[in-house]
Amino acid sequence: MSDIDLEAFHNYFKTKEGFERDGIFPIGKANKSFVGHAFGQSYLKRLDNDDLDMYHLTLEPGTRTYWHIHRSTWGGGLVMICVAGSGWHQVWGEDPVELKPGDIVSVKSDTKVWTGAKRLSWVSFLLIDLPGAGRGVEWCEPSENNLYD
Image (cartoon, rainbow, N blue to C red; front, side, top):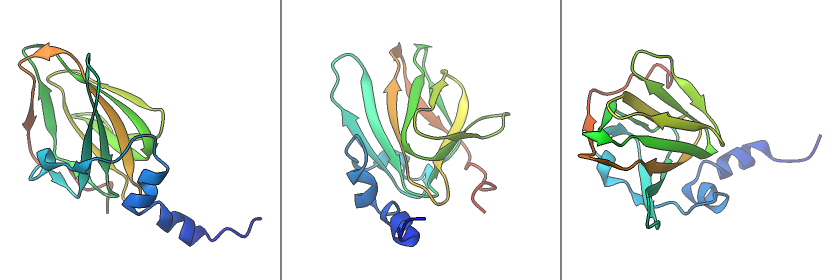
């Protein structure tokens, strides 16, 4: 057994600076698009790409979105790739799914979902908005907190 201070190790990953230091993408600025539509704090950074709308989304421990629907008149949808930490994703009417680095979620247009970080873990996603017309997000009711109690 090594002499690692496990409490210090875990606390290191509970800070924004520690999480960002070991991440593969920089953490963006406070995500204003989630204000009033999420519990907790998130950060969003647009990634430069000429062909796709790509973002790095980071959620502090315990942060979760309200239920929401990615709308489009044709095409659209979202691909989420978990790149760090651990979290949850749920489609309306289905059980929540645990997300860890390397997990990929495809969110089809007009599907009601929520996403969140686990209670004690940061989580980061690479988000790719798929091409389409009339894209937007419809925010719905708050998500349940049964995974967070």
